[in-house]
Length: 395
Image (cartoon, rainbow, N blue to C red):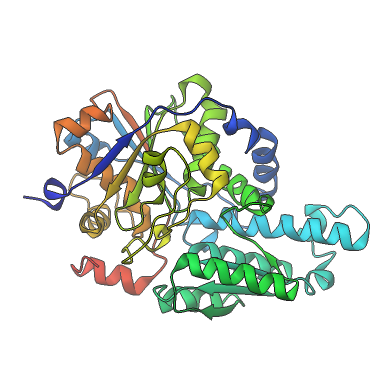
């Protein structure tokens, strides 16, 4: 038997709350502003939307579309769209207030205020990709950058951020502890947090992060001839899933797809939130191989959108992650190989495993007419870990 046939997936279905969060928490103007700015950056190019036709036939589905974010700005993940853009927006707001004049994003991009940016320190906590994006943005804009990482973040990811000029602070706790320390030290020192998760009184940077992700969603929508019927989205704090769900709703309207949120069973804060009907923390006891999804506290802003847009929440075991990475890299059905990281394949792994049992496949409404959209959120962001997976190691 395959790992997918023996995997245990936990599923909860909930009727989405009524509301307009998909257009108010993240407005069309928020997305439009981000698209205009990011698509003007040097090196911008659309990432591919791959059709996994052979696999979809094997699973009895109509189509599987995989948005591969590995090539994004040479940084290896969709996070390049969020942290860098949010950094620009923070600098824009701070400089406008300090200088008493309206500073534009174009002014910052062209280096007009580079000397002033050098006096503004931006900080964040990360599992790797968000911090890399922030470090890249700070390097381009001339702002100092401090990145807080937890004990399980690989040294390879830490090195990548250092090479972009960031100062790395490693703590002994988990991701949520690194978020707390970043906030505490920023408040003590007059630094500015650029986080992809929100909390009471802190909403603008995470809104900008999610708006930046809208570039990816817009590209995917424009590449498809018709709306997908389903979208399987990685969990984490919920920023990616909420942004994509809102972007799909704004683009496709009433034809927007069924939203399925996928998380590691070892870090299932959105699954627990769905069961409770309110944002709920999850106590992480063991780190998942999906490093970018190892989050125990949902973003309240993201949950506001997901509670109204997502109908299904799944947890998956780590045992099906490495096999999915290898399957994409070594396709057996004539498809082009895709080099994907551990967090990128969560949605795909869930689709494959769900299709192994008629009960879960039916519960998710998956059949031969289903058109599934997946966000391949990262490429090879840690070559050492990727090499171990390709050698046959599953963790």
